[in-house]
Length: 260
Image (tube, rainbow, N blue to C red; front, side, top):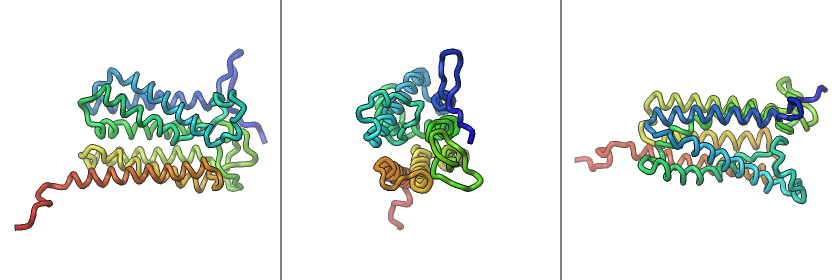
């Protein structure tokens, strides 16, 4: 089987396709997020600094979570900690650190605005960027595939024996469909109450991410895999609470008054 290309050379420099793809996805996500915020009436002047802080926090959180759940591999080998081109970013670790950083900076730079309105503008762009990132990033990293398969759709991945379930492509398609669904909700006016798009995105993304981990990727005895499944369910539950709260708040006051 031919080797899978994960990097290319320009003179003495080595460029890893995994990192290059994530950089492209991050830039597209930045432009799209900025556009959505501007159309929602937000001042986008400080957004570049906000985006850089969010990306840095996400990368640090994702890497630390991956190292923590694979400590036997990284213990005693500090150089491996920074070898991002070998893969190793835990999604929920990045989310866990990026959320508090993002909330703090949103209150700092947009103190008069609603956090729910801000996230409603951001979430579709983040999911679109995530969809692009799955296709351009993990698809070309070492060990990016899922379970071993003999089906026609299996693909070879660097560092893995045999053909694998193309999880990055599947997740890219899933997130792309979710992005279109959120835009449809927005166009139909169902998101007239702030927080509805955010809640819907949290529910679907959390559930799908947990199912992907269990069915396509998960090693059931591995703490990192179990952690992803639990974190996905927790995210979906939080989204359900947010959505239920916002939908109840939309009901006309007259429905709460006693019938005469």
